[in-house]
Image 1 (cartoon, rainbow, N blue to C red):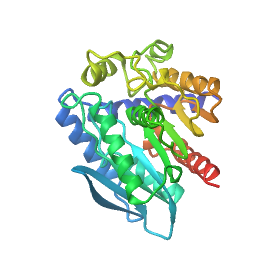
Image 2 (image 1 turned 120 degrees about the horizontal axis):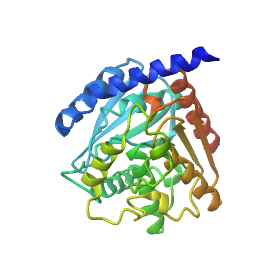
Image 3 (image 1 turned 90 degrees about the vertical axis):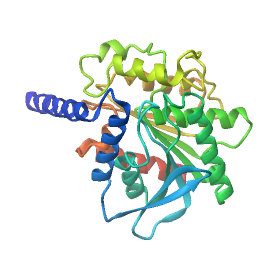
Image 4 (image 1 turned 45 degrees about the vertical axis):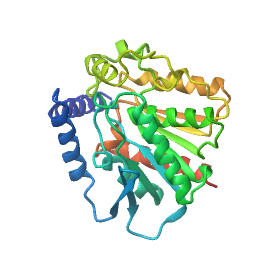
Length: 298
């Protein structure tokens, strides 16, 4: 029983070193490093990428190079603390989503903070949603997915749709979602020494860039505090060793309290958005994402 623990500690140290190479206080260099990783890890002949202009915003269709399902579509919101990330970086996830589900995935480059703080990202997400509706999809044909800040954005988009009395997506898939910008969850302290990817200093910097001067308990900024009555089936994945663990467990409870069909898997020994990494648990997680999506599309 000791060997797996040691192996996992070694893997966590490796993840910490790799993340340290990417993270940079110079925001432009940080963004460039992420794009470089996305270009490398997302480079596969099994997947094709097609650029699309969404009213002046860059978007990217991600599809498998084989016969696949066209009835449903996955709309993915990328992570990056609302300050970094892109469709290119998101290929580490969107290519896996397309491959595991055999569905088309649309990702988009919403405006980033600090140049464009809240509500820019939510406005851009709504613009992409409207684009899909005009493109010929119905709300029930769309599965909304997001990782980290993208999980926050996916929830904010669904809350905005509900607020406007519009139809909600068929389902939601969240990977390590950032749901509470007040950082009030117990895991912020309990997992501080374990998390190889995130720390409170980095998160505080992202909060300041995105929502300085705002009410952080506004559900459009911290969806954890939203009203989820009537929400579609939702699946949450989170790593056991991340400081955002409470953001998922508390969201799961909020969904249960609102009588929403929700499922959550906490992956032992895993870190923030581990699904990006070339590890067995990541492959299993993507298979489970696909199983959930298949179930709700029956």
